[in-house]
Length: 92
Picture 1 (cartoon, one colour):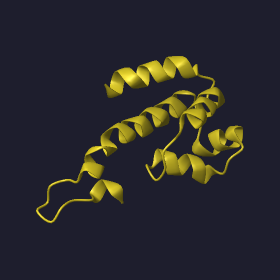
Picture 2: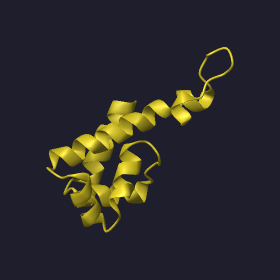
Picture 3: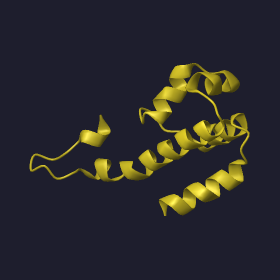
Picture 4: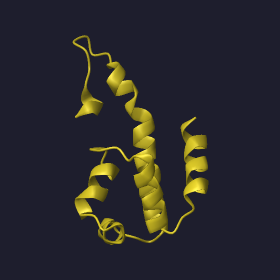
């Protein structure tokens, strides 16, 4: 897993240091889904994707692009612009 990559001396690689914002984004999307009262399965159904799609981005196995972010926001009935602004403020 990328998050566990380190050099021989134990210091983190650049790849590891960059993972922080992605973890915050994943946690943010999990909170937004739960605030909408949806399970992963219910959200996946609204997205017309397999449940594994939601599980993989929430678990950090894959990243969400901007188009997918908008689709997820719409599926949880949230304003993508508002959520993106909040996300940017929290990751800054």
